[in-house]
Length: 129
Length: 129
Image 1 (cartoon, chains in turn green, blue):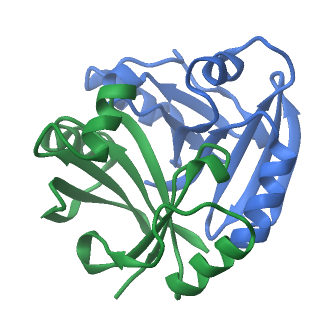
Image 2 (image 1 turned 90 degrees about the horizontal axis):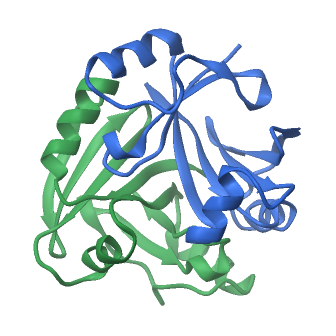
């Protein structure tokens, strides 16, 4: 396993991309609108910061912002086989958010583990297409 | 810049190290007691997960756990020159937690930026000794 990205909930992805870019030299690697979110991936070495800005007042990121404010949202680990990784987590008794891998941003296959089972950390498993 | 580690606030670092190790094959790279915390670094590719367990009811991690519960606490970016990176952040108008670099866990020189200036994300700058 290695870090794929760290997800950040934000109300202004453009401003945050500009700030991190100027402070840390993290150019924009990819932008898209996905699942009601404006998503921006910033290059950070071999991984990414993923900025998640909701386009509406609904959905999990909007609720997260309402409840906890902007900031770190999840950590994503890269795997060659997200289905096996999800099965292994479930076999170990970990509660999962997703029953099976699903399409994520940037064309990846993803699955989330439930933070109640992983020390309060929302973990995303990511398999690059 | 590249990811150095992601910091996690926890009430049971040993249990979380065991869980992540079994789920994600993240062996313990380093353990120490530092600044009132039991600190465990887990290998995740080229970076680390840093588990932070307070030894008392006082200090910033204990307060974080009381206020927000366990989970993601900060993201640390590696730099070759933490003093220059801190100066550059301040020059860009970023509020900082530390006025100057200070000794951190594992013998690193570190400085924190204030999350109010960085989109709610607590950013640590890390220079390896």
